[in-house]
Length: 389
Ligand SMILES: Cc1cc2nc3c(=O)[nH]c(=O)nc-3n(C[C@H](O)[C@H](O)[C@H](O)COP(=O)(O)OP(=O)(O)OC[C@H]3O[C@@H](n4cnc5c(N)ncnc54)[C@H](O)[C@@H]3O)c2cc1C
Image (cartoon, rainbow, N blue to C red):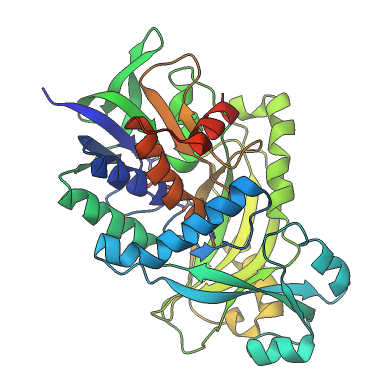
């Protein structure tokens, strides 16, 4: 019988990076993923690296570590993550006051540049000048998120790691000790199990009566095949509603709705944005909603029309281009930048999930976490571990 040092559940960007970093520390690691064809938040992500967005010493340090790590990641993993420096264009609504909107960004490490209508359209000619009052421009990084996850997985396999495609049904153990997992086909044993199951982390842990401060939104978006139009930047609204939506999660927790698996939407918002990948394909979105049932079904045609109409106000070319609708769960937490560390009152089980700015924070924190469990001191992981208790 094989006993692994670590089982990692979930092969999105989070689990893939962590499995690789744990293997680099010479642990014997099994990465378990339920889907052979990925259908997760990583695959539908814009791929933006918001390294300008640090608001305190901790997040500024992680932003800096994250962008530096990404700049060298293709070389380290021996596969192209499609990293590039790309402007982030934050559109300001016609009815908003640009100066007021700019002030909303004063807490970030990098101050955005405010561009008037003419300068905005010179920078991004596909913008509709009738819909905006101007833009904020920020230096941003960009990767292909799924190619990055795959690059981590390939490097993990080269280090001797194992990937198995089976859904984890439950954690194995009792009396507050987890000793492995049960999948649809097998039982796997490990000294430690770490859950990186994105939006499904909460329901998986709940089966073992483990409750973590981990929530999820339902994201709805459209992806397109390569198109002839050429976007020069990542487009998002300067007034993003998603953060306010996520903040309501703590109120929801008080009402214990999260444990009732309701189908009723608590709230849903649309942040109109788009990004183009190097092959010319686009990701256009996104509707975010809180519904505590992870398996709820959506009216696809209605959502697709809504997204196209809203995004086309800013970028008229998206109205008629071909595309496919997708839905995925996006994990988040409210009182920290992520849920990282060992689960309170349990042995052998950890969580590494629910990141704000996951694509910039996950690589440095996966490295730090692996070093920490290998016995090296790490104040940042200790702090985040305390936050999640
Ligand atoms: C439209 C959109 C745009 C975004 N843009 C950005 C952006 O620009 N920058 C940024 O930083 N973030 C962005 N995000 C968020 C970011 O993409 C996600 O938060 C991140 O990819 C989550 O990674 P993850 O590994 O935690 O989760 P996921 O990618 O969801 O992976 C979790 C994995 O766990 C697996 N799993 C779940 N349960 C089980 C089980 N029981 N057994 C086995 N496997 C299981 C799932 O199949 C899945 O593969 C965006 C998200 C969306 C939807």
